[in-house]
Image 1 (cartoon, rainbow, N blue to C red):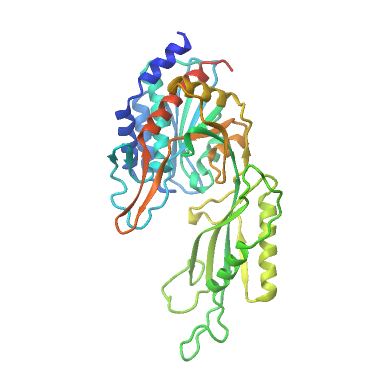
Image 2 (cartoon, rainbow, N blue to C red):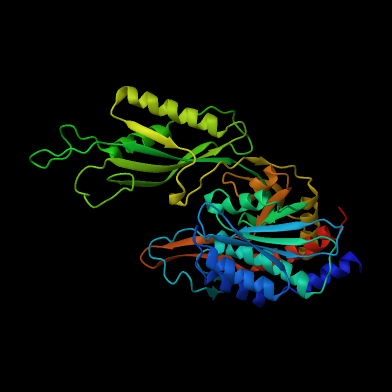
Amino acid sequence: MKGIEELITRVVDSVKEEEVVSFASEITRIPSFTGEETALARWLQKFFEERGYEVEMQEVPPHKGNFQPVARLRGSGGGKDLMFNGHMDVEPLFLDCKDPWTPKRVGNRLEGWGLENMKGGVAAMIMAAEAVRKAGVKLKGDIIVCPVLGELRAGTGTRHLIKKGVTADAAIVPEPYCCHDINTVTCGGVPFAINTKGRFSMHEDFTPRGGQAIDALQKMLKILDALDEMKMTYKPWSKVPEAPTVYCGAIRAGRGRNHSTRSAYFNVDFCTALIDVATVPGQTPNTVLKDVKRTIEKLREEDPDIIYEIEFPQDPKYYAADTYMPPMDAPVDMPIIQAIKRNYKRVTGDEIRSVGVPDIIPSDHAILYANGIPAVCIGPTGDWVHEPGVRHYQYINIDEMVLTTKVFAATAVDFCSSEK
C-alpha cells in the first residue's frame, strides 16, 4: 500500500462538489417519511449494487415491507471496519411547504425537504465511500454504509442492524450538529403515550358538557399542565444543565381508541398525548414513569374523574419513538475521534473547533455506543426556514456538506488502513 498521505490526497481530490450536490438532490426527490423509507432504500440498493458494493436489504419490524440497505465496500482484510450511519427518514412537512421534493441551489444553499435532517449528511457519508471507491484505493478494513430507517422512532433501524449482527470498530453519524465539532454527549429519551378516558353524555337539550359527561381532552390538558411542573427524580448533569425536560409532541382526541371525529360536535371520550422526556444519566424508563404516575395521581386527588393509562412502549401505529434511548457520554480520546481530528486538519489546515459538544437530543450514535461500537456525531448543518405566507423549507450548507465528505473520505482511509 502506498503512503497514507498520498492515498488520502488522492481520495480527497476525487470529491467533486457538483457530484455531491447532484447526489443530495437525487435522494431529496424521493419522499421518505418515517415508515415510508422503502422507495429511497430501493433506489440506494440499485445505486450501491451498480457500483460493486455488497448489499443486504433488511426488512425492519414492526411494519412489513419497510426496508433499509446495508452496503459494504469490502477491504482486503485485517483492518479496522468503519460504519457510516445516517437516517433516511425525514420530518413531517410544515404548513405551506412549497415544492418540498424539488431541490434547488441558491448560492451556498441546497434547498429541499429533509436536507438539513439529514439527507445532506447521508449524501456526505455515501459520497465519501464513493470517493474511496472511485480513487481505486483498496483499504484493509471495510467501509459499511448504513442508510437506516426510523431514527425519528428512537433508532428502529439502527437497533435492527445491531440485532442482525452488523458491527464495526467505530461509527460516524452525520447528524447536523456541525462539521467543525464532534458530538460525544447527549441526553437519553423516554418516549411514552398517555391516554385519558372520558364519558359521553347528551342531555335532551343537546348540551354535552353537563350531567354525566367527562371530556377526555379537558382532562388531558390538566395532565399536561401538571407534567410541565413535574418534579423528577434525578441528579443534575452539568454537561446538559437544562435537562431533564418534558415534551408533548402530539395530541389526538375523538371518539373511541381510533379518535374518530365523526361526531366532533360532542365531547371527546378518548384522548392520547405522545410524550418524550429527555433524560440525564441515572434516569431510566422506570424512574421517569414513576414520576409521571406520582404526578398524575396527585392530580386525581383533586379531580377523581381523571381516568388514564400509560403506554410504554407506545403503539407502533403512531410511527413515533417507541423505545428508550440511552444517554451518552463517550470519552473524547477514542481512536475514531483522533482519526477525525487528524483528517479535519489534513483537509482544512486547521484544528477542529471542539470535541465533546453536548446536545439534549439523542441520535443513533447513542445506540451504537451503548452496544459497544465507538460512535460520534459530526455532520453538515443547514436550517429550517419559516417564511409566513411564503413557504417553509429546509436547506443544507453546500460548503459544509462538501467539507464533511472530504473529511469522512480521508478518515475512512486513515482508520480502515490500520490493523485491528
